[in-house]
Length: 181
Image (cartoon, rainbow, N blue to C red; front, side):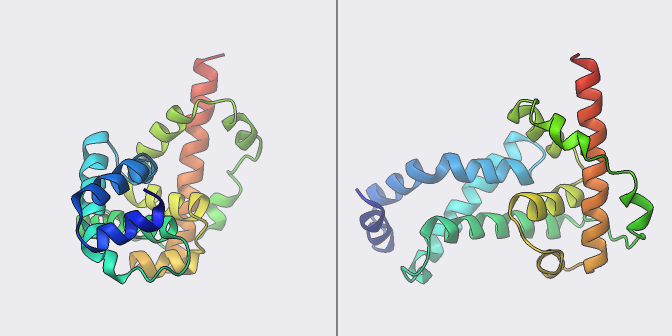
């Protein structure tokens, strides 16, 4: 089945098309889930919730733009909805200048030498709000204004959480490199 046949079959609630869709995209969507969840069980739950939402809302896909992009947005929004429900997103508006000087650009180069699974684990260890903002800004390429709207926070909060997340990640990277040198 090609993508168009899968989408059409899913719109007609055909189990074989739903299975094909899951098999084609589950690995990629699971990667998104892992970036927003602190453990694999939570990521599995998010994956299941995301696919339920995809199957429930597939009629709204208008064959305009990327289907993969449409699905990614559903999974990201589902993850953000879970974070908003959890109320663990830290509401701070600390002056970003207090943290900007602590960012070390050489750490970014060192990150390329760390296995991807280890970096993912480091991101998952961040506080939920920091991890969400980091993923949305650094990975998904949203602006701080867009992130603020998505999460219901101030733009300055998004910026400060990103800077703090980056600082925490850099510390984790430095410790990892020190321990594995």
